[in-house]
Structure formats: C-alpha cells, structure tokens
Image 1 (cartoon, rainbow, N blue to C red):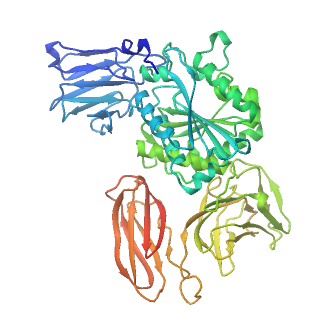
Image 2 (cartoon, rainbow, N blue to C red):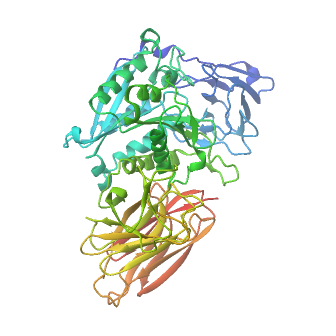
Amino acid sequence: MSKPASRLFFIIFLFIFNPVFSQIVFDANFESGNLNTVSTTDSIHFKVTTHEDIGGRWFYFRMSGVQNKFVSVEVQNSDVTKAMYSYDDEVYVRFSDAESPQINKFEKTYEQDTVFVAYYTPFNYSFLQKKLMEWEGKNIVKLDTLGFTPQNFPIQELTVTDFTVEDSSKFNVWIHARTHPGETPGSWHFLGIVDELLSGKEVINYYLTKIVFHIVPFVNPDGVYFGRSRTNYSGVDLESNWDKPESETSQEVKILRARMKELNDEKPFSVFLNLHSQASSYCTFWIHTASSTSDAFYKKEYFFANLNASDNPYFEQEDFNESNLRSRYPEGWLWNNYGEQVLALTYETPYNNYFKDSGKPLIEVTNENLAEIGKRTVYSIAEFLKISHPKRVVLDNPQSFVNGNATVANAGKKFYGENYIKLPVDDTNAYAGYLAENLIPNSSYDLYGWWQSGDVYAYDTEIIASNNNENFAFRKNQRLNGGQWNYLGEVFVYNNGQLSIKVKASQTGPAIADAFRLIYNGPVLSVEDENLPAGFKLYQNYPNPFNPSTTIRYTIPSLGKPVDVKLAVYDVLGRKVTELVNGTEAPGEYSVVFDGSNLSSGIYYYRLEAGSYMITKGMILLK
C-alpha cells in the first residue's frame, strides 16, 4: 500500500527548546500521537492540552530529557484517572496511585531519558499490520481489503473459519472494533478474540467448522493513525453516521454497510458485536429495551450478555446497561433491515478498573485480562449458538424429557435459550432428564447448571448425574445465581461415553430445569477396579474465588507402586507461578494450601500431573 500523502505532515509536532524547560522536550511525532499545547512556569509542573474532536480524552506523546527529574503533567482536557507510561513504546505500565494524585494528572521521577505516556496502552496501525502479516499465512485466515478511506488507508476484513467446510452450513458472526480511535482497550479485547480463534485448540477448530467469523480490526484507520479521540480525520463520528443520507454518509460507513448488506442478504449474522471502550470503570453491554425492539429480542440480548458475564472475573450482571435502539447506530441499521434475525450489541470494556459496584475489590485493566475477556467472548458466542463438542458440551431443553407434570416458561431475563422447564411442587415424582452422548470415554468432566432464578423457586433442588457405575448428587438453591453457569462438581464418564442428568421436583418451590454444560478435564485411570478410587481426582479449590489463600485437594489411586506427582500453579499466560508438589506419593487423598497474597487479582490455573495423567482447573483470586 502506498503511504498517504498527508501521512507525514498532519501529526502536530511540539518541540520546546526554551531554556526555561530545562531541555525537557514534548512531541507527538509518531502514529496515533495527540498533543496540542504545553506550558510551564517552573520547568517541573506542565500543563498540556490535546487536539479535541468530540472531547479531548485521547493523548499520546513523548517526553525527552526527563531522566532523574521529577515531572508533573496535567492533561487539562482529558478525563484520565491513571495513565500509562513506557520507556520503549512497547511495554506500558500504569502510573501508581501515588503518581496519579488527581484526575488528569500524573507525576513521577523517570529512570530513563525518554518516556512515552498515553491514556491507555496504544494499539496503532503499524502494530495491526504486523499482526495481520502473522495471521495471514494461516490456512484458516483470509485477509481482504473492503475499500479505502479518504486518507487512503484500507478498511480490512479478517475472515477466520475452516475453509474446507462449505460456508452455507455455518453461522455468520461479525465483530468490529476501533470506531472511536482512542478506545484502545477494544483492540486488546479484539486481539484476545483472534488469538483464541487461532490457538489451534481442538474445540476451537471444531467451532470454525460451524462459524464464519468476519472481523474488521479498525473501522476508523484514519482516526487511529492521526491520533483522534472519537472521530475520523475529517471530524465525523462514524458510530452515529449510519442513518445519514448518502451524501452525508462517510466513506468508511459506506464501505462497511455495503459489505454487511452483502453478507446479511445471503445469510443474516447470528451475532454482531461492536467493540468499544468506556471511561466508566466496568464492562458493559448496551442492551436495547423491549419497547424499542421486541420482547423476544430483548430477552435474547440478556441471554448473550449473561453468557459473557458468567464465569467472568471481570464482568457481572449488575454491570449491564439498557438504552433505546437508535437508527443512527450500526445496531439500529441492522434492526431496521434484518430485525430479530441479528443479535446486535455494543460490548464496552473499561480503561481503568472492573466492576460498577465500588464496594467490590477493584481489578485494574491490563492487556492480559482484556485478552482473557476476548477469549471468553469466543466461547460465549459458541454457547449462544448452542454448538457442542465432546470436550465442551451444552445441553438445552430440546434435548430433555419430562416425567410427570411440568410447564414450559419464558418469564424473566436469566434463562438459557428460548425457555425453561418448571417442575411443580405438588408432583414430587416429577423430573426432567437430559442425556449427554458422544462424550470422551473414561474421562473426567466439570458439570455446570444454568437456571432462571427468583424468590419463588426451590432452594434445595436436587440434581443427579449418572453413568453406568455411580451417581453424583448435587443440591442447589435456585432462588440465587440465575443467568449464569453454576459449578455443580466433577463427574466421570466411562466406556459408553454417556452421562444422564436428572432435575427432581422439590417441595420448597418449583424446581427449574434449563441447561447444563460439561467441560472435559482429562482421562480417568484405573476405573475397572471398584475397590480402588475411580481415578486420579483433582477437586475444585475451596474457597473460590479466594483471598488470599485456598485449599486444593486431589486423590491418587493405587496402581501397585508410588506415583510421581507434580502440582503447579500458572497464570493466564501459562507462566508457572509456583510448584506446590513435586515428588513421589502413595495412594490416598491429599490437600495443599495455596497462598496468593503476593499475587495480583485475576485468573490462575492449577495443574496436577501424576504419571501419564494430567488435569487442569481454574481458580480466581479476588483482592
């Protein structure tokens, strides 16, 4: 691609050589840079402004000559709480609380001569092109240019799917990001999505035989390149440009609208996600009210939102927002043209912290946990589409059967899919059954249940999972924790690869049978001898979430000789945090305490290795 003629000249450079500044130089001479004015009275305290479009939130500039100097900077037209800095423009660190004494301000004594500062970690055009070059060579990726912007940048579409399977049999999913160029957390969220899709995992590869992912990394490459906050180079907010007359519609929106129409006319998107970031310190979905859409669509939005908040240490149901659907936004354009066929939502991630409820322990936003949210987005899409793989199975009501009296309901906003089954109080013999087939024989699975909750429902619902050899019984309070995957426990599947699940009626209120999920843990050994433990068992840590310590239990069966055992903890990047066990152990049940007091909040994994057997589970540290 030839470089845009304007590329070299429209970024404002600000070099300050006046001796009063003690040779401290400010500039924004790079991609996505944004700096307008700088002033000081004492060469220590500086006031800067950014070039504003719709607000002046985004800033990104460089300071030189700062080594061993205390420098205080106030960005007067931004709303940053704790900005980011980097000495190499690659690895960014957040200013500490002490270094961020008030909104818009950061101050620090720097260890190196040059430092870059930004509202959040940048994700610029050149970095995206490097990633696209890495991805383009993979056989599940196709890169296309949909058209060119007024500044001659390409709007690029990344298609990720299994191209050996006919697309006509697949779901279509559309994801786009960076409509507002300053919202860089949305790009790190996007990166987590793509990295998971390209991970080569068996379950993910199966999803790609069922789904075509159409992904536009930058809706607004002009704005990204030239350091805008919320508009394109010409000052147009592309997000609210979708209902304009053709003469007033931006080139970027025309390009996207044409491509989306082409795809939707052939087969409407099953999911459309519009990735954004917000100054408020929590993730959210903007769920469109039933009055501006329809009751069925409103409930479908909550279904998808609940899936994303479930199992998610950075997102909870209390964080959702509602708004009326507007034609000026892409979701409004989709509704006006395709109605309920397209589940369309804006997904907002924050810059600073997670959780709307300020009473909760705050978790700071990082590129790593944004990527984890992206990974979870992929699985939420598959579960919304009810796609199952033998290692990750979802059972919904169409796969159930009922004994006795029961009613099918769809009241509320916390059920899975289209409806749920209510078992009556007055028929104690009633139950709903599910059968999971084609599971991996002689394996361990984690079992989860989903239900619509409410004050009237049973508080001691009995759920029994059965294989040929044994039953696993669980009791749950269905007045609580609706609209999410509730961990029930570990179950085992033997030679026939089947597991039956029964939800029994309760006398404490209507029991709910809605959906179940099975996630593969690993093989179970020594299941033939009923006098021995069924196999190596790794239990869910307790408590979970935990702060600062938790207990991990595991069982070693008798194999005629002691077994080499390792138990280690890893972070979300797969780096070993600590090794809890490394030695030879006799048969028996063991417990180990893991102390996370020196670790930051987040997701961690613990893995048990015993001989040729290995199993991994996740746990959440919340400080």
